Length: 210
Image 1 (cartoon, helix red, strand yellow):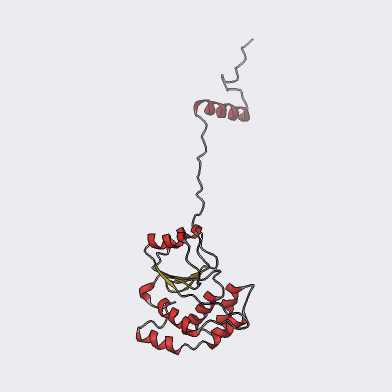
Image 2: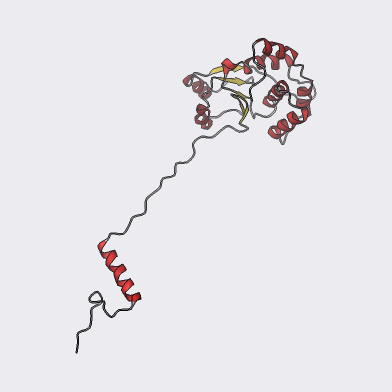
């Protein structure tokens, strides 16, 4: 009687399926198992402030920046920040400005509210002289929520760009929602922009870059 073949001995009489299993087992014995490569996912640390958007050229808008937004704002290489609120600027924001050599312009204005509070037109004109000056760019405009005061200022910039009132109001409502103020839209519509137009033309600031 002939001796039987061992499992890993002669494979002469084995089926093709058995042969495949034996060869695969031999390969595993000879080669160490492959260890899957570990991929480290780094979370996105760049968080823009609420209501952040590019207005035109290197002019930006947003709500009040907080420390978690500073890394994002650094990427813009800001030269100036225009603040439309009267409250003192927080110490951490002041330090961010100093560390990044950013000019600080604070022009406090009150939002349009019934019955007797209205944004002074001359205040908007003075702010626009700062905002439109290319020497101050890149520049960020903000108030508290980046909705109403900032929206009025941006609406006046849109008038200088010859946007229709329909387009201006659509943009205003998108940022101001859900608290759209009819007084803000009225202010934008009635804003007399000839003084700033003359001033901007003399300084070659018009047309405003898209």
